[in-house]
Amino acid sequence: MLRKLLSIVSLPVFFASLSFAQTPAFEDLQPLTAADIQAGVLVSDDLQAQKKWGVSYILNGTLTVNDEKILFNTPDGRIFELDMSRRKARKFNGQTVHLEAKAKQADDMSVLKVSGIEKYDPALHELTLPPYQAKRRRAEVVSDLDGTLTVNNIRWFQASVPAKDSFDWATASIKPELVKNVYFVKKPFAPEWIAAHSLLTFTFEKGGLTDANGNEASGLSLTIEAFLREGQSYGLVSGMKKKFGIVWMLTTWEDYAARTALYDTDSPRLIPYAVNFTHEQKAQMVREAVKLAAVNRDGEFYDTITNNCTNNLVLIMNHVLPENRRMKMWTIPYLVFNLRATMPVWVPAYLQKKGLLGEEMAPVTAANYQIPLP
Image (cartoon, rainbow, N blue to C red; front, side, top):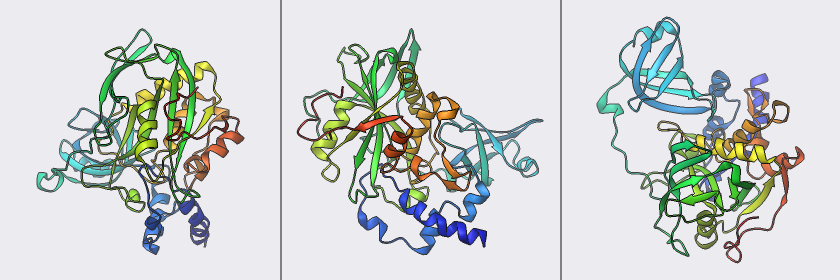
């Protein structure tokens, strides 16, 4: 009876918690079946079993059992601790394995809870995948010296107007102490009662954000999206089925605003809200955003509900807030995800109620996108 009741309660949570890193179509809602809903409802059998483990991974690597921990080493040098039966782990001790697992959340991936494991088979597990689409790259922190972050792979157009299908990338110097303001930015889609994308934008005083050639940008944006490969397109239901990787991408505000205003015909405007933080909190938030954007997330999956464009921005805000002001990510702990912390349409009001966001500002459109944010 309790399971049935929770499932009924969760149906509106499921439908209301949809957020999109790419342009969605309303038709995405139509093919939902009972099976799809059961897969997406946040109190499904699988999620109750997994409890607080919300970020999915599929990885290959070497498993090692020692006296204290079960460790997993990936070929690119990452080390995870595994939460699984030691008895089962000993069967794979010293072997290369293929596993499916979950981390708690996108800023806490040191421990993976294993849901499936088998011996690695190159024929099955070493797939040749298409390249990623050119518009997205993962940032790389080159150095952090004397108060300056040097970062590779910031999307930064060099012309007065960016080419629609051509992208420039820069190595830039970021000085967090020169941050001026922080904005939570909503990018609505149709149907706007349910669909939107969210990003964070940091504006800087002169000298706060410069590329290797000395060019300055007024702002830096963090946008968290499905990391699509050539031939892929984002879909609502597929976004819940481990179809897409995830990328925390850094781009100049100028680049993001211009591409939205000029080329996103389905979502041509951006709505900023000022974040009401102290200067110290804003500077720390710059550091947290850049640090998390540079994390190697190979094998991690975007999820429409639990690992998306919006709830991860809330996680970053939680990093700089005192514990008594942090947003709760679960309405019912580990059973029902807090839609107010994951849905772009609802998050601004939730944060305003907590005194963390200012009023909705004038939209950024094709008429004014060249005017920097304050």
